[in-house]
Image (cartoon, rainbow, N blue to C red; front, top):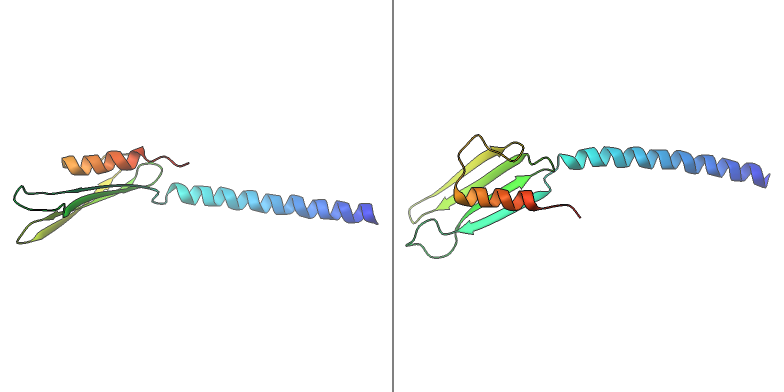
Length: 111
């Protein structure tokens, strides 16, 4: 009876291990498309403005796909931009600060 109980327990452990491996594979696939790399650059867009109120933020997945959000702060108004990123490149021209934020995001490596 002990041997039969042990064999049954081992079969259950093997089945649970298979379920855990399948779930890990599903999560790994999901995480590859999740935003996991972020680069932020704050800057002063105009020489006569104090503080670094303008910014560029690159948000990427593990394939370097994502977006760059940027905002230019001025005394009279503020303008926001969003540029798509595919495989680490944009079809839109990037500012120096946006390119820096993209480089920072792409240099983030998972531990």
